[in-house]
Image (cartoon, rainbow, N blue to C red; front, side, top):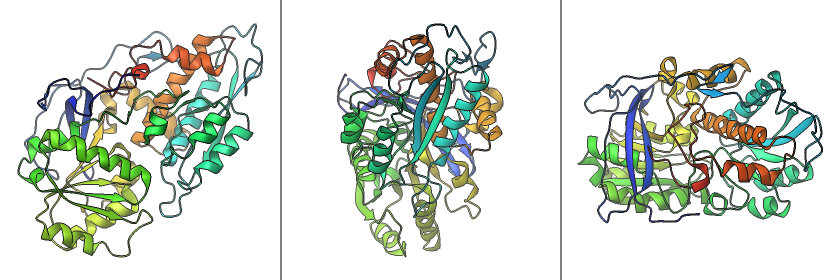
Length: 433
């Protein structure tokens, strides 16, 4: 597993979202001592519009050619009856006819009910679709959906081990560091939607479609905001929740963002369960002359409450956010416009361009058709499921955890049918477009 410094080379696009702007960032190693930013045209429509600031620029979107037969985007579905002759109970959670997998999210967290439920909903929807097509080489997929509720991740992981599932697929748990002793204790391999902690991001038996290593970081959103607002980013601050997931991410930002011209002043810790009054945080930033903020946590309710307090106290801010903020619930909550001027890091084609990108539309149709909600983390879970399913198909009748991990390690490029920029899961490096 390659390791390197945290500075990254990136190319990006930006698209308008209901509550501001989304930054699509792609990163890789930056070998130069000088931090540089490259801006190129991409095969997605680019719009910068009122609400986030900056001048607009547009490039044409082109759809990828479709594969023959039924496809997800330009990826031939890895699901189908295949030749089931020879299927055996080849590993834990496997029978001749079934595959038992687990997934999960933090939807039961009391301070933010329904948190990231789109993750589990995506995996369930795609497993059902896969079964409609004939399963994986004739084996039907069964899904256990675990609720870690952030603080109960150990309980969820213990249950997954006791249930003797084959693998965890497409799950996303905020406190994934604390699960590792239990996961590794039962040799539970995983293809997750995302990783947060260094312990999980570099853990054995884990391979993800869009890597998020601890020692490298996408700086696309930082570079884009710096290009649009060069003065504001020299007066920046951070807000982060008082638990490990947001602290680790904040620490990476404080190292990586300055390579793109950001200069940080106040770094304020808030209660992850929520604050009764966000005004003291706003006033500290205002007194320090802060004009740009990196906010680590979740959109609802904390980020919204903070931005509403900023609006009441006439503090105008440009904010940089992680991928989990690209969520229809977050956008729908912005009726008052308090969250305008928000920039979100992402390497996925946004929902607003689904009419020009089949994979995005296929994701929306599959999940909403099953009654689920859509979000960027849901798309990440979808990419993880499809990556796992492709490897499971390629493993054939001798389906084992180790075969899945080893097979994915041979895939040099993965886009989940055009759902996101090309990645190399085996490298555990951030996406470089």
